[in-house]
Image (tube, rainbow, N blue to C red; front, top):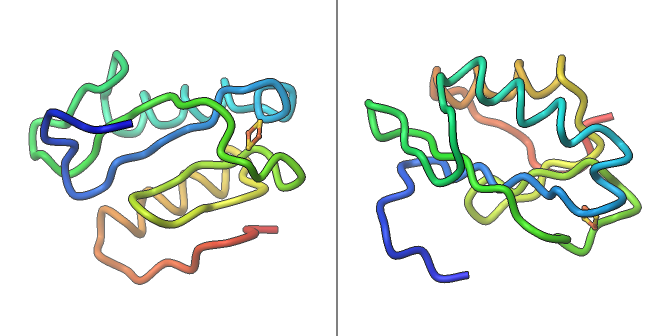
Length: 101
Ligand code: FES
């Protein structure tokens, strides 16, 4: 759980445990890989802003699928909402953690 390398401004921790997996976390990882050009776990974007880190259960299974961005949870995500969230983070637009739908 300790990060020994630079994870950038936004560390995207995607829960890949059972409930989130059943609710589409694989699709969320694909969106992050497509949008940010990340190919593997723990990779950092060239601008050092984003990193991707698949993680085990974040303890919010009832609002799966869940991503933790730094200290904040973003819950009940889908690919469309995640794309919008990533755009806001890229553009420096304030985002609201919690349930997204
Ligand atoms: S399985 Fe994802 S939060 Fe529990």
